[in-house]
Amino acid sequence: MAKRANDTLKGSIYGTWQMDCGVWGIRTRNVFCYLIVGDSSAMLVDTAYGQGNLMEAIRKITDLPVICVNTHTHYDHSGGNALFEEVWAGPGGEKDAVRKKSLPHPSYALRLLCDGQVFDLGGRSVTCIPIGAHHPASFAFLDEKGRNLIAGDELDPCQVLLNLRGDTARKDLLEMHRNNMLKIMSLSDRFDRILPSHNGTPLDKSYLEDFLALSEGMLEGKIQPCETVTGFGWSPLIFGGNRKLERYSCGKASFICRKERNL
Ligand SMILES: [Zn+2]
Image (tube, rainbow, N blue to C red; front, side, top):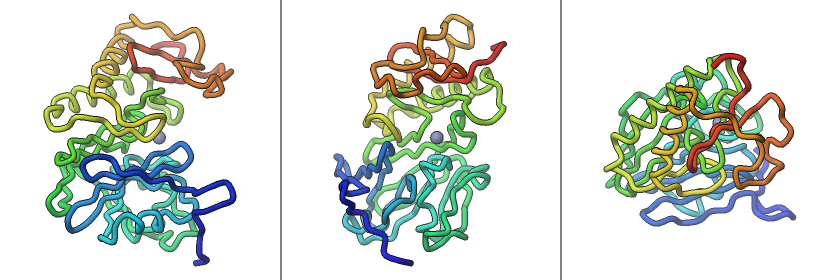
């Protein structure tokens, strides 16, 4: 494979920063990946778009073997999976996980995560928790030593995109998201902060209550769509003018949904 450069005339493709408690953030464009470093191995959560050379960015942080997992397999989370011989993702992830031919292992083995599966990184373990709604194969990763819950696109400070793809009814997705929030809240004495994949990190745990109130309010028909899909304190360029979508919000939580005639 030709050497892929991270440093371009516009700057480095991957920005990395060390957070407290042994977790590194790796940012490219609008995506946050996370690297949890144990004593004997490290876990990379998500591979973003697969641009440049993500492995080179990781090797500046650690020489340990790297276990690669996906929060879910959308193209902006699994684009660099083919850097690895083996990647772990939730059941169903095999349908849309990206296999870039320009990367070293386009035929990589996709291993399926189980509910409650634990990865031992040496002095640090990570527990896998299914939380599918935004994507049916979503998993959260609980890093108890660092007291972090990595939540992918199922929690987000700007919006969770609920039913932009697929044909699952909004009501069913809202029930799934609500149940996932209850499941995560039942574990909340094991983490202090939530690490999402976009728009700002870390999040306070109070987002769980706001998202729970939002899904319950929508299911009960008590929350009406916002006047505009744009905004929510963010650039009006985001989703601006898309008449097929609508935004709902409650407290700090917001969903963007495809319009449906009957909820
Ligand atoms: Zn996604």
